[in-house]
Image (tube, rainbow, N blue to C red; front, side, top):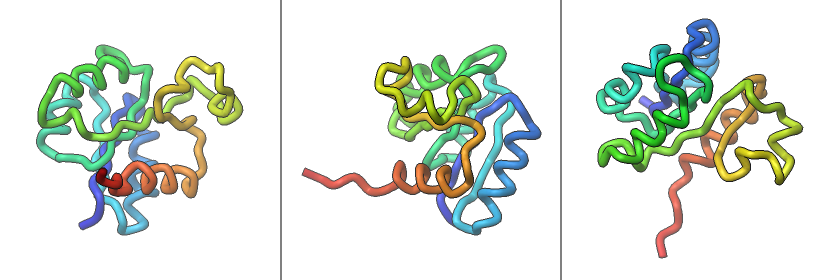
Length: 128
């Protein structure tokens, strides 16, 4: 199978639609997690190559999940891209915007842009 992508978002309709779109390319194996309380266990079991994560979720938000991942040897190197409704495409381009130091995309992203971001994040990094 292809690259393993995990979707972590509390909106099942959104993750189901996105999973179907990404899986239709036959390039990705996609798992969706709609309860942030189970996300870390699901990550350990699925071993994703990349995580697309919402920021605003009940119980544990995306920022807290990423902080917990960074404290876990098995999860800390998995790249995370925030996929969130908190920002628009225009805000994303503003250098003064508060999330400028993090990778994120607005939820209403085009499939081509999302795939481009996924592929960029999964490119092998040059070694020194």
